[in-house]
Length: 84
Image (cartoon, rainbow, N blue to C red; front, side, top):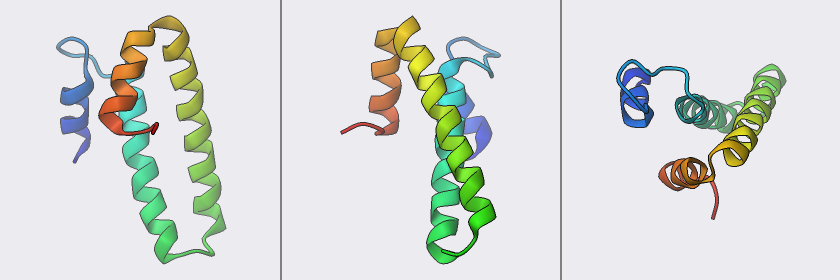
């Protein structure tokens, strides 16, 4: 899925590109991409560091969303399949 499709799926209103929901979805896509890269290149430590930074950023945004709007948080993690 490309960036525009992700934004369309998770945006709250037309033209919304920066809401927490959209940010989490975009970060998740980048994290999945980097994870696949690291499976092929396990010694790529520079990319691994970037992945850890992305995971940390996503965690902070999810924490913000959970505190601000628990219903939206539940919907986002369910759509993205983040929690079991």
